[in-house]
Image 1: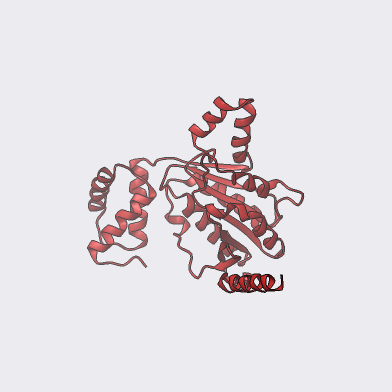
Image 2 (image 1 turned 30 degrees about the vertical axis):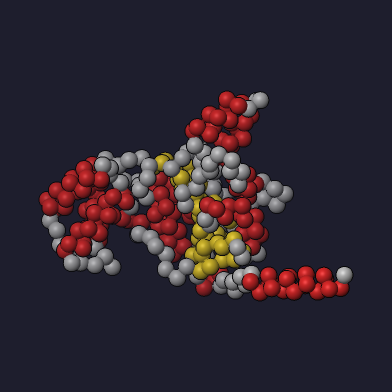
Length: 284
């Protein structure tokens, strides 16, 4: 018996040595942005956030103003809503979240932090909420990019509970922003399947759709018009002082959008990178 116990102790010690050591606690005061790592749990500081300035985001004026106002209220300690930015690909959903954070954080003297959580780590949200509850001096935007759930995926229940459920509820210094191509975060065929196979179809569908109801602010993003596409390109070109005429820029825009088969903020940025490369200019 003693020999077996000794073997088990050696195995346990070996596993402890193999397990990754927890990261040192991140200095919340010293950084403005973090990534949440679920295994082992902890915040990892982001040295430089990948984002564009707010004035460069064109064609989304209404959604921009709504998200900015919501973020300002939250940063100042007033009631604000969890926000879902949904709609067309490449129209600046995640860019708007990061730009709004930068703008408002500057206004409140660096007290507004942003934390990105990956879709696969949603189940660890309660642990993150508990951690942030211990930093009442700061306000935190927990941000999940490209959030969606597929069939057989039950982690959406963790998100529902973390947003406003449970005994403790969401900490007052935390708000949740998410982007998605889907308005209800779930594929339509999944919702229809729930309706056709459930004993009580309406209840089954409501269980799935009610996840989106946890977001008090829904901001829709739609494909841009040609004029809006031109405005995006002209804004980038002026900002980065690209040596190209307005006529040549528009000609390149038409050709590029036809080749890509779409017009969006992402497509505009890709064209700007192509033009800057051909001109031998940098985008600093």
